[in-house]
Structures are given as structure tokens and as C-alpha cells.
Amino acid sequence: MERVPQVIIIDRNTLSCIALHSILSDIIPFADIRSYNSFTDFSQASHNMVFHFFVSEDTVLQNINYFLHIQEKVIVLTTTSATPFGLSSFKTIDISRSEKEIIKSFLSLHNTGHQNGHKRIQEHNDKGNLLSEREKDVLSLLVRGYINKEIADKLNISKTTVISHRNNIAEKLGDRSIGRLTIYAVLNGIVDLHELCLSEP
Image (tube, rainbow, N blue to C red):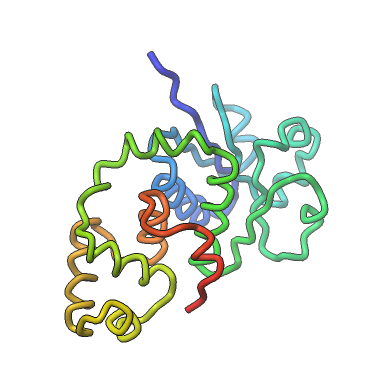
């Protein structure tokens, strides 16, 4: 029986844990994602094959000896870009940024750290061929920050048609969140991560 890789979230902020769990479930649907509100709770549970830790900055600082030994697996959750971890070998994500910027950070870390993970994501993604080519065109522009009128102009269609396509996309994928749609678009090759980094609304 194949062992399922685990992802650990440690943050005393319950809402932050829930949000991270949701994002990570979209990016790595095959993983066993577990959340803890303290390092003590985490240390009292059993784990195997943990390949990532997403841990609040204060938790890492309070348990630095533990995390130093596994720092290649640790992503520190910060609330500012001016963090002492910025000059260390720890990877960081500033969770005070906008949803779109946070999603970009997660996808960038995922793309650079797990090149062979894409095959498994595709195997677990049953929605890969749900969208028509035109819907993919609309989605590509949407997640790159274009508004309805701009999408209509670029694709030479009416604004009403763009709205209709957006509704179809939301219905087929079961979500209207730009963050979730961005994850879907990147993981299914509809848009390149570098296009997101270069395009601002």
C-alpha cells in the first residue's frame, strides 16, 4: 500500500490553518494535510513521510532547534516582508499579502520544489478537460487580472459572452474565487506562473 505524503500546518490562528488547508488541498490533493494550533499538539501526534511544514514565525522561533534540522522542508508563515527569516535559508510566505500574491507564492514554491509532483496532481484532477477552449481563453485572461471589458476586447467577443463564459467556468469548476481559479489554471497548464507574476490587474 502506497504511503500518503503528509503536509503539516502549525499556527495558533485557527482561521489561518483553515485557509491554508483549503489552498494546499487544491494544490496537492493527494496529500494528507494536518493542522495543529501548537507545536505541543503536533509533537504529541504521530507522523510519517512529512514532506512540508507550514509553520508560523513565532512557532519556528520558539522551537528553532527542531526546525533547523529540517529547514529544507519548512515554509515559515510571516506577516511582513521584514522578517529575520528573509536572510536565512528558510523559505517564507508573507500571509499578510493579497490572496492573489499568496497564491502565486504557493504555486511558485510548489513548481520549484516538486517538478515530478505535477504528474500526480494531473492523476488526481478529474476536471482537467471540463472547459472548452474558449472558456480556457477567458480563464487565462481572468486570472492574469483582466476585467470583463478587456477580455471581450482581446478575444473579440461581447462583454455579455464573457460573463456567460465566466458563469460556465464557475459552474463547471464549482468555484468563483480568483485564488482557486488561479490554482486550477496553473496546474492544468492554462496559464504559466510567470505570466501571473508579470501581469497585474
